[in-house]
Length: 330
Image 1 (cartoon, rainbow, N blue to C red):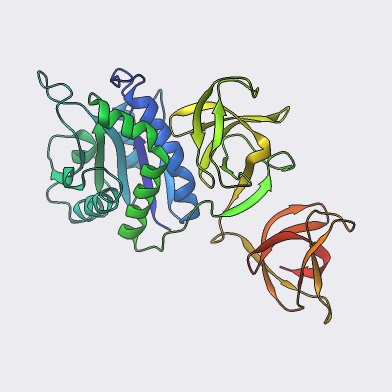
Image 2: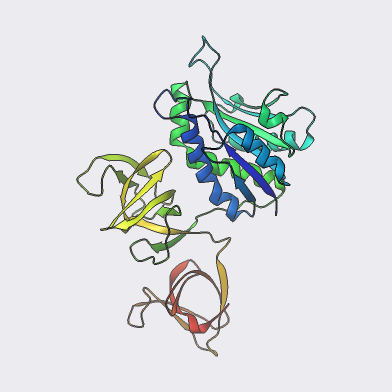
């Protein structure tokens, strides 16, 4: 398993033109990247506030990491505030692996940045996190926080940027890219094992965006929307049908009725139906009185998404429902 040192910006005094700081939003980006690293089999150690740059470099050098990845946003030169845009990946000139990693990350980010020609690699001997780290290193400057267009793009695309970074990392390490959340999991109102700081996804019935509100009440202001199927970070477990969460840079409350646990079809366990020749009923809920929505032949392979007492929640041939766990061999 490859292992990286993840170093989001610690610069709390670098302010975005539209509010917030570099440390805040690069921290959000690191939060969003973490589940992608886990699902894709990339180990990581992360630097966090109130750490210092010197300590972060020292911690990185204490380990045997395959890559040191620093996440920053940029600022225009003095006297030209707001005039620059784009993304740069800095690497040490003599580091072959650093350049390879920078190229892989840039190639991925070109796919989502509005002007791909402004996404490029830069050799440097002056940036400490590139010059002083033992591991091959890349320092990403993701947009200019003093430029309104870039600042808004960063805030509105934290999830997309994290996904693109993960795609770049898997390309660099020669790994197949896996999605974090591409199967509809269990509804948050009934999910017994959901934890805070886990990712959930919007699962509206009709595919419409899910409103994020300023308070846990349908009458409060809409402050953002989560597209159906997209992930959000759960900040508090649901209370009275509402969950506090963060999507990109927007924090607020969303109805738990339209939030589901995150499940990846790449990481879900598999099991084999063992019914001695008969079909296994696939039910709409974990109960023998729930409606039968399908039947699974003996010997079939199913993906196990969740467990609920004596039941497994499984996916089979595009259908998702519940089966008795006694009839599944894992």
